[in-house]
Image (tube, rainbow, N blue to C red; front, side, top):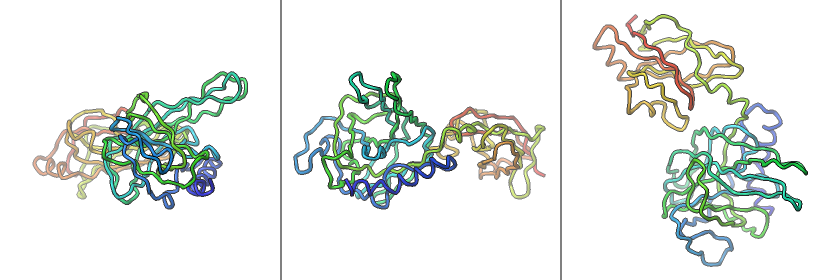
Length: 349
């Protein structure tokens, strides 16, 4: 197991340090500098449970893979409860559509001693994406994860423990795997058929391989650092906003809470009030419903104020060239929450 442990040692060390400090993101998963894919099974051909033996066709065109190192209780299990903010995956020469998913295990004390663990339901997933061949692809994500402590002896509660996996979305795209060369140990892979999609799709069947690493690394922030993911408050009063000579509109906003605020301030043509997703382009959720006349991101410490300057887009500049004033909506949003909007009139300074 020495070679397998080496591939996760760097990420595990970083995770241990970050958990102790409870300040920054915790990194977990494989060391992508060392974990180079060298096995590429496709879903219909099953999984390489024993090297050298022929694969047995399983009859499913999609599947989900994950792994755990039970020697160190690491792998793709999130080490803390929080939100996974970014996920990186390394693939080989052949690539295709994939999703990163959150897979929930349940652990409970067994009547005769030991702990029973049951795998898995899918509780969250990213949009489908296609990673770049022979490179590491990094996604911005907003995936909630839970890591309950193991039940103590005598406890009857069930502990939820979430891990990440990758779902391949068609029959020809291979799952990127790293064969550690050590088989028969406690580095285990879990393969679910068909590929899972959130929420809570229970797999029809599953298999267990041994000695393979899925080259995924992720950053998770503690739940306490995610409390301020609500829109900041628009402090600027009045119904008129001035456009400066630099085609920007200043607004005063405030973070009124116990943790930081972050998100977007936008000028839009309609009052959509829609939530903004971290996994999408800032304007993607508005594209089908409203024109975006300006956008700026914000990040404010708890209890502080800041002036943000919303720079006009091409559509916004065209709007102000054709008239002395225009009515728009100012929208203050944050990931996956309902936005706060106000009707205003734009005028040139």
